[in-house]
Image 1 (cartoon, rainbow, N blue to C red):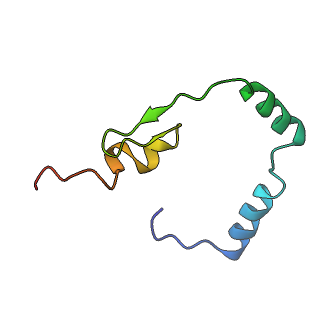
Image 2: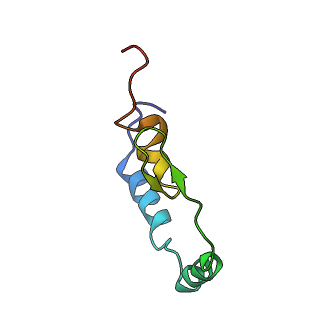
Length: 72
């Protein structure tokens, strides 16, 4: 599908299909209730010793700016 050009008709059809697909207030409330009271596991980066939750994996561990290259 790489390089394929979409027609205006297909773009509009796709836009119409995705309109209104939002999470309902009831669903938001259920998600909130299910996660309340649960402790988030704390992780520590071995390179900079920073501590945090699940999002640490995005910026730390193998992606940490304090990680030294093995070639140096």
